[in-house]
Image 1 (cartoon, rainbow, N blue to C red):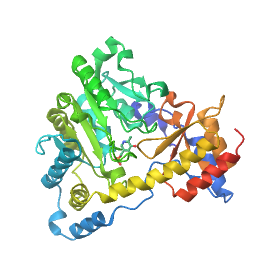
Image 2: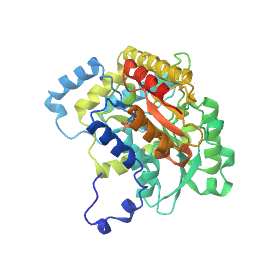
Image 3: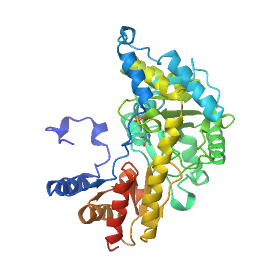
Image 4: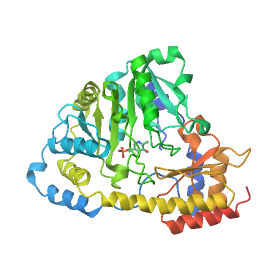
Length: 394
Ligand SMILES: *Cc1c(COP(=O)(O)O)cnc(C)c1O
């Protein structure tokens, strides 16, 4: 991050951004690299596996077709919206009207950041989990909205305690953000939780914005994570963000979609019509190939992460660590030793074991007591990380 020469010219909304918490970790990482250390980077949630071949092939042939070189339509290609609807029908039995209830996004981060522009006026209240992906709060702040943090605690399975949200807060709230399977905690939600959330949102007239980026990164083939949209009545109150980034190792491709309530989808679409011109159609063709093609590649990806999870979490548990073995996502939380903060523990991992982890406080104050490690490295490297952490005296 660069320091602006004249910070006084910055708009208030940028000056209000939370402080950048990873400066110390970044510095320790630079130092270690400078010394030639063999770093194991388990910091960033970005798949190291390649995009499956048939998806790349679809991009390559579509890229050569002149009809795809022009401006795409704002809401995304009809075939992609249909493929998205078919995906939801097949995966969750959710019926979506592709013409009104699906919108193509330039990655879900884009949609998540822009969504509040459509629905949050200055001073409006938005409920954001803590810890959470930072974009939920930032999007609200950029609109002059107020963020109310809803704590996610280990003893509640990192699910929000809806009954503990004060009635005045619920009544005032415009949107509640939710994200399961969850980054950074790796927690999953049950359909019962979503049923309660939909009932709560209907009672208090709150929009539910569900980020389902890790819907297809799970480890029990018999228990795939649910979508909130499969709850009856959910489409009255909810919009869901589905990303191809993690399912098909396509983080660099920038492709996702929003779906659910038609008015919510239309509001977001209206914002986007005014700020962007959609996704390159060759990328949309690749997304169609991904969603409509053989899903064996996704099951294979899950198998790789499951093996890695067993190496890392099994190894750390045997070494005496309090590690939360995930059922989904490619993250795991490791509890810090007693009396050690997330930041101190991450700094020690870096300087003494040359392992990059993320202090969970980077996602909110309630992340205190945990460091997040990713499974985005080969099993041998994770085994090496276990060996190094076993030698740390904690
Ligand atoms: C990775 C991730 C996304 C996906 O972002 P894209 O912009 O679609 O790549 C969304 N939400 C969370 C919580 C994530 O970790």
